[in-house]
Image (tube, rainbow over all chains, first blue to last red; front, side, top):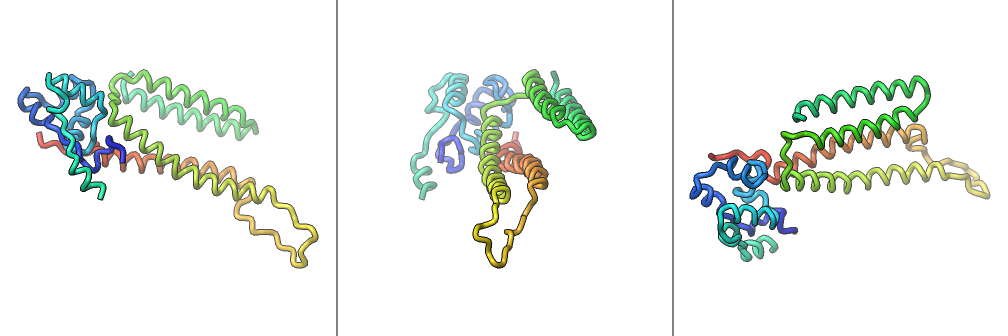
Length: 82
Length: 148
């Protein structure tokens, strides 16, 4: 299954945590990076895994490395593939 | 252009196309509706590009892409199966030497009706697309509720 399907949910993210740190609403973040609020919500809930470009844009916005916002759980993927 | 203006415009295009269709039927000239259809669709595409309050990000593009792909995957199989059947009927010639009990294979749909049937299939595709779109929109969190 392609990585951006978001079904197995091996990709975790801390967008919600960073939003709280920066006191941002989903709408604020969405406008800042040029997506819809629904996309931010879907990413936070693990329903949608963003493209590498969008992931970088989010990380850059919070001025952190991409790994600090997004983590890849290899075990979750292995369990999902079984 | 606002989103609602575009929807109104699309409705007007559809009405005009319907009128042209019946005019073509009246004058027995399919060229009118064929040209009008292409012009109408191109016009709708161009108008859509001018919509300013319609935000399309990668997730909505992904939903559309997946829905179109699945619709096409289902549609072409059904459409080809029916069309091949129609071609078989058109290509049918009696065998030689003739069978003692000559029986023509049953005609499922006459070539005349086939056009209507294919048009009906195309219309059904719209419903198929809407169904797939709703499925993928739900899958990618379109109607997720927010806890904020």
